[in-house]
Amino acid sequence: MNEQRTKKIMGTLSGVGVGGIGIYMITHPRTSVEQIVVLLMAALVIFAVINLISVFFKSQGDSKKMRMFGAAVNLTFTVLLFYFRFTVADLIPYIFAAYVLINSVAKLISALIDWRDGVPNYGVYFLSGLLSFIFGIYLFINSYFKTASFAIVAGIYLIWYGVTLVFDAFNDQETQEKMSQTAKQFQRKMRIALPSLLGAFVPMTLLKKYDNKIASEDANAYILSQEVLIPEKAGINPMNVEILVHLSKKFMEAFGHVDLIFGNEAISYGNFDGHSYRLGGAMSDGVLFICDKDRYLRESVLNDGKVLISFKVAFSDDELAIIKDNYGRFQENMVEWFCDTQLVEQGLLKPGDYTGVEDIIYKGTGARFYKFKKGPLKTYFALNTNCVKVADSLFENTGFEKPATGNIVTPGAYYQFLMGALERPGTKIYEKKIYSRETFGNQEEIATQEAL
Image (cartoon, rainbow, N blue to C red; front, top):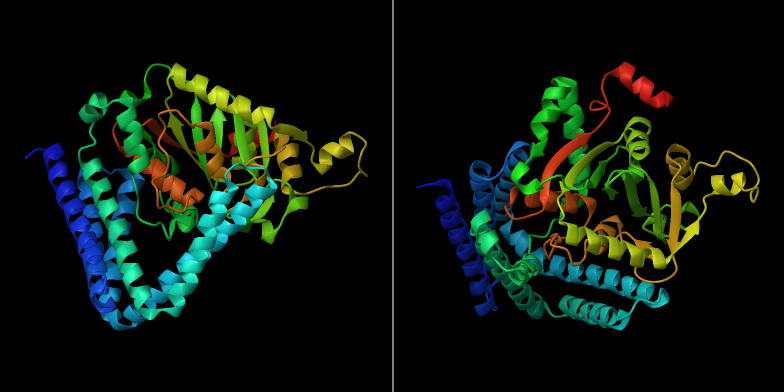
């Protein structure tokens, strides 16, 4: 039995198994919470098996180890669920209700931001958040409703995820070539992933692992083992488009950051105006900056001490034209903004050593900063309009996949999505590489770079 056939059989069986558990949970909403916990244990075992199978048939390098880690985590949770099943059975309905409430509050905040910034259809988002909030309160009040609601929602989620597994099982290069553009777009929109509860901590884990490996192994050999190139997905002389995932030890940046490279320019969006910070920087004015790619990489790696994981994307000429149009719409809504250091240079502010994040970026890269007049990017909000959303907005209406529905789109979750896209046939991610102090050469070369 060849590898592709085995993959299809195991993927189909996994999808049917997960979907079957979901159907049972929906058709038996009065099932006791203890039985629901047993069903969830069965689902976790299936997920662990899927990860282990993918290790042998799909994954490589860092992704292979992450999938093995994922399988170990799922099996560990299965054991813990079995040992504490009665305690968990009491807590699950309340955890579900709390999640609904937290999610509804995030939606309400986002709706209010959209209303203030003139974003169309903010009312739909507000209504969704309000209904979710009422639903969450009712879940806390009605113990039976908590159990039945959790069973139905979890059941729907597992069915949808089961369908995704079957789709992925048959998603080989030959199938992609036969699919129409409409079918591909439908497939991208219908994919769903498991909630990435630990996704926010992925950048910290990756950086710690990188540091440990570099300290104990040959740096060049380790870096080469982590880099991946799939020439058949790259096409002929593609324009240099990269998605950068940042790994940093700094507290405010430890959860990661995502930005883009187009040709010789770096583009980044985030909370780069320290004067407008609210909620500890989780909310602020949205600021986009543009600078020279080489200066940005040098500043990020050599001066900030970051490790950047780059995913290269191959777009067709037509898709590049679409991205250019999307960026043109961005520019129509942008107004240039100046950091304190620039205002000093213009004689508009008292001289001094200004050390805001925006000033550091300007001093290191000569970046040009912009704010937005209105719309969804006017306000940065870590739980909604963050650095990841800008990448999705620029790639809108191209063949580039979006993160599967159901994930919290943090930089860590986005890294996991990009790794999956790199491995799947028919996607546009064709290379993964690393920018770090080690890739810039030995210490003498680094000193030369820093002197530039």
